[in-house]
Length: 299
Length: 258
Image 1 (cartoon, one colour):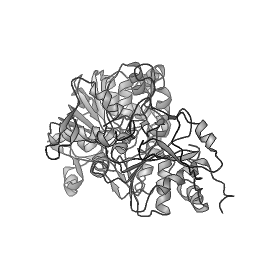
Image 2: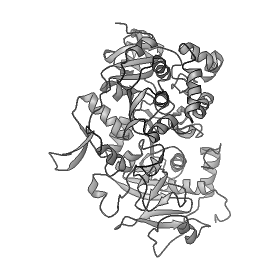
Image 3: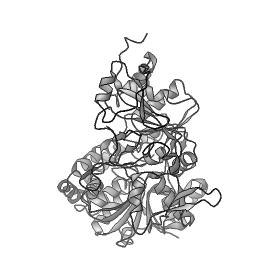
Image 4: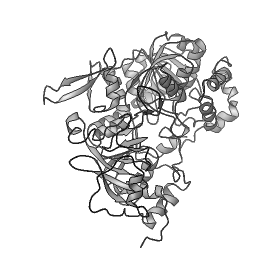
């Protein structure tokens, strides 16, 4: 069955107050076109989760679409901190449930396996755990190993309402390939109640059937397939295009202040009708062609 | 002798980091100096080391180390494996297979606890930084951790304002009792190398770098480390190690100033 949908329709399926898991990692495979459309449609009060904070979560927080972030920290690496997320935390306007990369992965993994909790060594002794122990309802607990008697920290599973995953290749049923490293994406998809796939390339199911071992996103878990080229811009999609260094700089500078961010949103999000107008505004075909990945290098 | 060899303090730190890696070991690496250290070790005394990046990259051979971060695909080039957090931090790290984890921090304390989360009073006004990423996981599970940090009084404190990644906690056997694996092994600064006192678990000077004095080392930290009777000078880099860093690993000089 075809689940191919416009971005607008896929985004419209997200209700306010939903928990959305996003596929970005810092400046790679961020769900940027999706985030822009969420902002344009005015969907608010979201909970956003991902192992390592990325540009998709940062812009959603900056635009006021997010009430709560569940993540393992993160930055844009050498291009700086996630100013919108950090500012919201400093000002107390964003509820946070902060973990580490592995504890987030384990929470998704427990969700994907239908387990009631998952034991972990990480977080013990840290102030991250101290902060989490103050949360109600509880997110962490203690349990005795019935085999050795050892006491373990256990985490509550994470079951997002929807995972939004940026992929290179998908068919119309949502069977999808993630090429390159995939950080927490497979566990996010499998933990979530449903998945929206945003793909650079839409291929026939016959193509998928010829290399089924590559299919990390299972079509039967997918509600919408959105075929949208350069939909992770200005972040990178391995093997398809590089990140746009210049535009990341534009965002980095703008997001340093609420005023700068507002100008950015007015110009690149509210000031365009859709993703195609956005692509024109960031330089059009000339810029995008320069970002195309070399097939050997992958960037 | 190597006394006439010129090298930067960054190069000295990178070489000191490389020496912590043994051949055949598995190393968990973050961006920056650890990348230079681990690539240097692989090209010299540890050709059979395995280098892991937490997001799911094993043994890459990048054409450049002048990259944005771990999310920059340049640093994934020619990897043997592209996989996931669940694999790297789960089936490798959490299973206990990472021998050495390299970590950086905003500040480190007398017991090797690391803060990468915030500066200031956590209950009052504070400035927020990166948080954990895989840092807490590596500090919790790697057999040995090696911390690299600039030698400044504001970065070397008796206690950190937020424990993002655990060291020996408050010292003694507190870490052993807390369900963590492995332990902090070294803290490498641009003035000295530290290990930890086996009983108190307090940071202990292991060597001080050439052209530095004990006074200079102590004046630029906010707590008093354990000082052993015998305090050697850190072994300087060899000409070949410096050449490899400058000509083969980081010819663009991307990290020399960091």
